[in-house]
Image 1 (cartoon, rainbow, N blue to C red):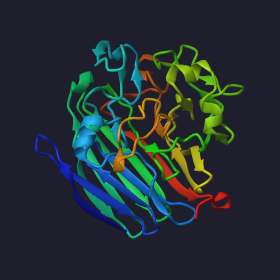
Image 2: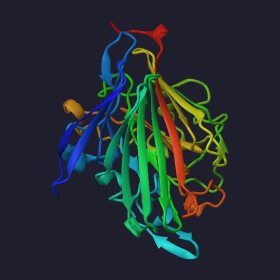
Image 3: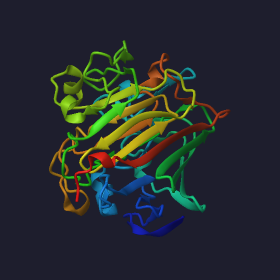
Image 4: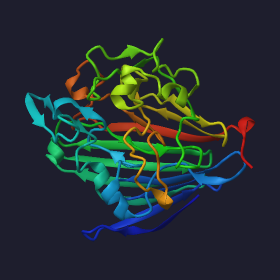
Length: 361
C-alpha cells in the first residue's frame, strides 16, 4: 500500500497543512490533514461499485479555520463535557475555559483540533499508516502537565481503518481523546440520516440533564427507553420521539456504556447501515464508552464540501471515549493519567457492503 502527500494550504501564521491519502486498492481511500490530525474524507463504494465520500468536511483550510465543528478532528485534551469547567486533582482545583454554557467541552476554544500536528508515514504491503504527533504544554487551556500525544491512522486491505492513540504526561492530569468524524453513508451529505439503521451493543447509557451533563443516577438501563439501540433501529423512528432525553439534546447526544471498567479490550460497539446504498460500518473500540451524536447543532445553512448544505441530523458521529465529567465522578472509569502510565486507545472502523439490500444502479 502507498500513501500520497500534497499540500492542503497554509495557515495565516504560515504553517503548511499537509494532506495524506491512504488507498487500500479496493476502492477505499482515507484523506487526512495535519490540521487537527483530521480525517478529511473517507470514500467507499456502494453496493453498485460507485465511490462516494461518506463524511462531512470542507474543501479548504480557510473553512476549517472559520467554521469547524470538530469535523473529523482529534478532540482533546478532554472530549465531551466537564461540569462547571473545573475539577480537583491531587488537592488542587483546576479551572478550565467555560465554552459550553458554564461547562467545558472538547478541550476548549483551542483544543487539539486547532493545532497543526507533525506527521510521518509507515508503509507495509497490507497496510499503511500516517502517524501524527502533538505536544500540549503544561497549563494548556487550564489542564496540568505537559502531554505528548501520538495518533496513528492505519488503513489495511481488509477495509478497516484503525486509530491507535497513545500519550504520556510529565505530571498528573486528566485526558480523554476521541475522533469526531461525522458519517453519512448514503454518499449524499445533503440528505438526513433518518433512513440509516443503527445498532449499539450497550445495555446501559448515561442520561443527561439540560446541560448535557450525566445525571447523578447515571448509568441507567436502556431497556424500555427510546435509548435502546441493542437491536437494529431505523434512526428516524427513534430520533423524533418526544422523549425528554432527546429534547434536551435536540437528538442523540449520549454516551453508551460498553464497560464499567477500563479493561482496554477491543469490543464491537456499534454498527451503522444505509440499506439503499448497501454501505455499512462497524465500530470496535477499547474505550469504556461510545458517544452517539446525531449532528444536532448543524444549522442547515452552512456550505460544506462541494458547496453542499448539510441539514440538522444530516450526519452521525461515533465518539469512542471515556465518560463525560469523569474528573468529577469517581464512580466513572478514571481519566487520570500519571507519569508512570501511558494512555492508550484503539478504535477500528470496518467498512462493509450489505449487497442484499442494494437499491442503486
